[in-house]
Image (cartoon, rainbow, N blue to C red; front, side):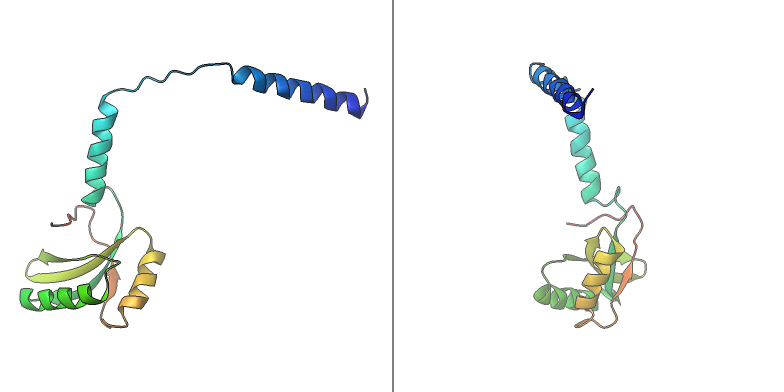
Length: 131
């Protein structure tokens, strides 16, 4: 057989496959519990119980100073949200939830221009974002 004949046979086979695939109908039945499980997963991700993230610590100490740091930070940076966390006996100001160390490093370089003592940490997976 020649190369031209082989190409013609191969082309006919491929055309035949595509012409029969389009004629088929696919029916998907979904368990109704999937929607509730997806909603639960979304909640757990926002509460940081499923994700392994990094954050930047700006300050630890008294509540009054933590509030000052938080207001100063919020006035200058709005792209990374910050919260005050309490771990006995100190209050801590944490900024951002970064999914990779590289992303956290980039943010730290920008933040350290105003907050020189800031550093990256990896909080426990049970951290909850207080609202």
